[in-house]
Amino acid sequence: MATATAAAARDAGASTAEVGAHIYSGNCVPCHQQNGVGIPNVYPSLAGSPVVLGDPAQLAQWVIKGQRPPSMPAGRYPTQMLQFGWMKPADAAALFSYLRSNFGNSAAPVDAAAVAKALGQ
Image (cartoon, rainbow, N blue to C red; front, side, top):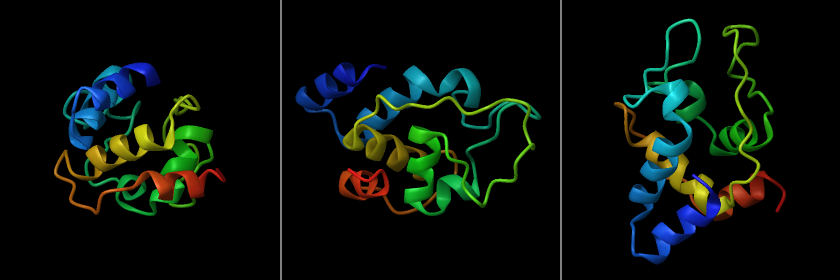
């Protein structure tokens, strides 16, 4: 999903959870699957993921800039995470909050200010 589409969803009154779900469906499903379990030995599961449930700053650095978090061992998967540098902090916060509250996960939501700070914006 392009940022314009996420902004349009927000402008149309979509909740943060709905914006996060739209971003996930449009960008993450091909690798992590609709249910968030990924593809074994190819793409990691987001369910119970220490990266998803851990420090939101590290998650932002990983998803947006491709900087591997220390909690993720290198070489575990043969694929590389795509970088979503187009994502604005509000979009990333909506996506991360969605990830942290779905697929059996239960972690605090992420706000745009925290994402912006993590990215040095």
